[in-house]
Image (cartoon, rainbow, N blue to C red; front, side):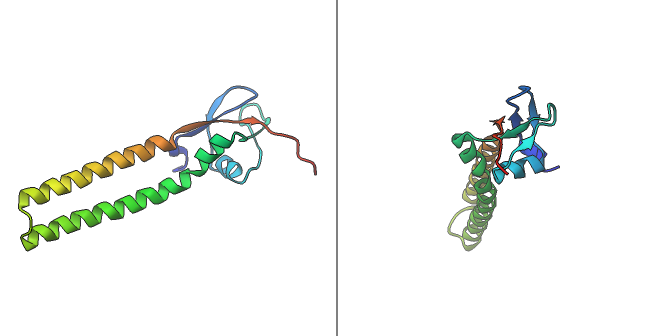
Length: 129
């Protein structure tokens, strides 16, 4: 259910229907396998190199969010320690903390925007068995 909220959709080359891709369909795309359209039951695959590259970049977005969270927590902790030691005032510590939180939300918003995509799925080529 969490994967469906990623916002990855596919547009069928046969029936031109846009559908939210299921986890098994995303897995098929990631291993370059064809799958059937849930509406018209015809074989589909992703062949556009630009879309494949963008689809593969979703893996790095998960790591980006995790590393961003660690960086922001570290910045908040450093600002707290600097205020506690007396190197910055309470107001400066609050400003640094608010700036760090703002940067976090802007970066997470960017990452969420990048993961919403509609893939143009093409008719699958017949595989020789």
